[in-house]
Length: 437
Image 1 (spheres, rainbow, N blue to C red):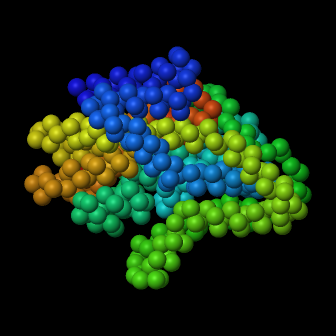
Image 2 (image 1 turned 180 degrees about the vertical axis):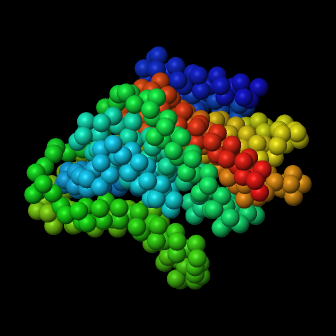
């Protein structure tokens, strides 16, 4: 019954947005309240849960998304993005630009939260698309596929790292197995899949794309790359440091503080304000004007992400995920497939890959000793399942849709299918590794 309610509510959400033309944020709030009531949440608690979901989602993302948008706007307006694009195109050539962007997404995605990597790298996709008259979806999906794979498969990314701890796996082995799965998953969901949607048209937000400048007006190559990727350098450094050295006391607090994504974005934006802003001849008023424009453009996305957080919180508070998978634990399904399926069901129901993975791991952890599955492969199976079919209750779905300015239909045909390919390839790869090992 709960699963039927979820399906009906998701259908209502889609109809409100597509048929009734309701504002997505308003549609999310209405459907979140309706879902809570239908799932039996006490009436006195429904609105509080919705508010908690909105606050919880924005609390973790608003600083990173807004500062990332500011950095992207500055990188675009000052010509740094154009310089980066020129260097990439000269190095890899236009025919291989998909692979260049995909590799970039894979490398920088390992230490980053998905939303951080998305905000940092999407402006690069748009710059290439506008400057070289290429389809944004065609060149963007491979990079986003790489980000998704690192989000679900590879420590020291936060989600897989947490799964390693919950399932008592080995970090090193999980990373090695994860790389074995990551490469084919990215290639199949990226360059190969996009052949089928290479003509999909989109008009992405121009806030990250400035008019072309003369080469003499552009910042230097190193300055452009370093200013744009400084958040990646800082976050990667902090992640690697904490992976091999976990200091305690004051030093531990300092390392944790400096490695916090919000702090990293503040430092990186401050540096970029000087290096490609003030140092290149822009006055503070002009730079702040760029930032104001970025905030205006990003605010609708923040509200949509907040709405998705409200619906997710209703699902969590109602306990529907536990109910949905309770009947699966005693089945005769292969344990690795079971792990993938549990995570996948929660992912489709709730929307959050992290919540899906951690919830599935919490269900499986007590029975790991009885089901006889390799814990390292179970981490990857659950991680793959947590990426299954992103749709309207996932904030990533709406970020992609709004940034790329696509219809819901085209978002499903590109984004949702890409995520599903990554998930299914991950499961197949886990089963092959289980057979070989």
